Length: 134
Image (cartoon, rainbow, N blue to C red; front, side, top):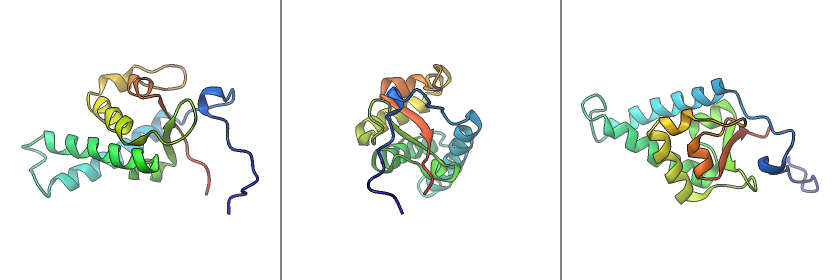
């Protein structure tokens, strides 16, 4: 049970001890989400022939899950989450959709800063953080 009187964690932007999750955990989450997207896209397209289908599902998955829950299923399994850089809250549906579109371009995710924030994170004011323990 969460202690309601415990101080709220500092937002990543102002936390001098902020440590981003490893690239392995982030990549693991992406692989899990990609497999789920491949499976889901089979309901309306052939993911081998129609390469756009799993990418579309991935973008929509990111918009829905990150916008509302701060975690995709892959992030939940690997115990990471995506929150707003400035206040640590959810990024919302519009920013999550933009983040998913930028992630689908791949290159923005490869250009990272010292906090492992890719261009897709910086442009949407988001950051991937370790998920708090339940």
